[in-house]
Image (cartoon, rainbow, N blue to C red; front, top):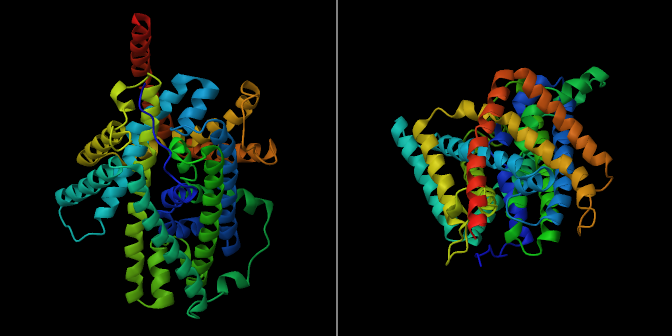
Length: 439
């Protein structure tokens, strides 16, 4: 009998996986971009509030799916159960080759920019050592990786909460941005849902992280839905508080287009020397995002291998550490290869469309599985169904349409990259069928 993953993660561990996965560099940099597209401080805040609401709707939708299928793999499992194994495999394929491995590589290279290393080679070696170290730690046990995740997440939460509370009490900012707020028109609302929402949604991305490790969470039918919802609420409240503080520190007219908004806000509210703290916690946020991805993503490839549609050894569990060590190692190798190549940033743009589509199709799976798996036990059902799911789907479909219109070549190429997995799926499927036939 094949060795299975053990349930060792608590509700708190699962919540911090989400918090650590979501809170990255984005919250320190994207508000200026959002303000550039928004017409006022009010519209900027509405965009961030809507992003949080959509994340919560997505979390509620995934919660029903997670309560039905508390297994390793997250949306790979939901797509498999709703549409079949090939669509699920293609999602896992592009996750491994580009989305997750590429994100890890990009984040690690971003982290190297905060060192004093000058040469490109030394930065790549540093980035590679970070990935290898965190991957090795997570091979030694999911609880070890989770403990590091909790420490990093605690640090980030404490910093952002302290920044917001102390910043607003400092008396060194101004409420000018909120004093003369124009009335919202229908045009303004459409504008908010357009270009201003894209950086917001990407800064909120990762609200589904705990679903990937559901099989290793204690009482997953209850705790995974709780973690998805609690994690989304915590991040939303924190993001709203931080953005109010940004607008207090920097007048709206000056905020638009600024990239290093976190650093400038710190300097304005607490002095130039204090702004160095922003860099320290950006490093915390990057490490947290890398570690969270290394914990969660290999569970997708593990599930693919267990389904017999991927390399068989990737589905192995370490005899001592009870982790999918081969899956973690494979992801590490591909991430290191992408760092060595160093020209993969555009590939991440190519698959942005696929990332959004995967959330859309996973959410649609709720409708399909309500019919297909009507008798399956569910500890959680989506509130206000079907309207809440429809609202989430409509919003994400608008974003997908916006990405397709804005970057048609990249979106189409993303689909092409995804479809390159078809012959590999057919090869592994045939091998599995032959193996079963021989038995």
